[in-house]
Image (cartoon, rainbow, N blue to C red):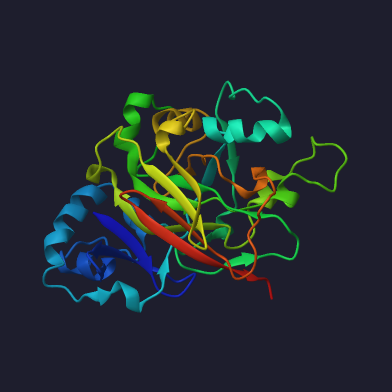
Length: 303
């Protein structure tokens, strides 16, 4: 099944998506006459029996009030996770495209894990704000992995049972800020700030539950800017796949329901193009993952 969020930014409500219509999560739960009723998707995933409840909710949509998905603003399927993690330098093609600019780069011996501020999360069709602090706005289509239950020190073979689902995400970066180009020493990089401006993590349009997919089958990834294909690959390109990433991170910190991990982006980012082609005001960047849908965000200058 598919979970979405809808409504005003910061006040999104959770919903179940069926076709082109959404059904309010809280209203469906009330029909079940359950003692636990929640209005947002992260709180729903925190209910231990959420998978069972979701199966029970699907038949109720046939008699519930439908909302046209195109008549409301969609937010990120998980509006405010506790953590938003990123796997950096995690595709073979991304390392290869960096060679002309950075020289030969060997794959990391262990996953390179970064993070973004959760304030960066926005809806799948919200404007992407170009901050005044950057002239190098870049995109990265990435598979978003959503944690489904408390995850701590698990093995790779246990990962599937700890996931809620997947969604399309865009790991936006201000490259000049991220790489601290104003510093003479390249050691002084500030990945977190360069990736955490508001709207730098569009997500959606829905979180599709794990059971909807054949486990291990690769996801196709595409990015377009104004319709021009910039990235075109699949998750077979990942150096560390979903199982390896989730297991690795769980041995360093506890993951909670709703936490999101962006798994890494393939070649085709603006920073490594020759010449570089960073996002400009008025351009539209679209990221699509097969089976998960597309997100499309117009670049607007910060007011």
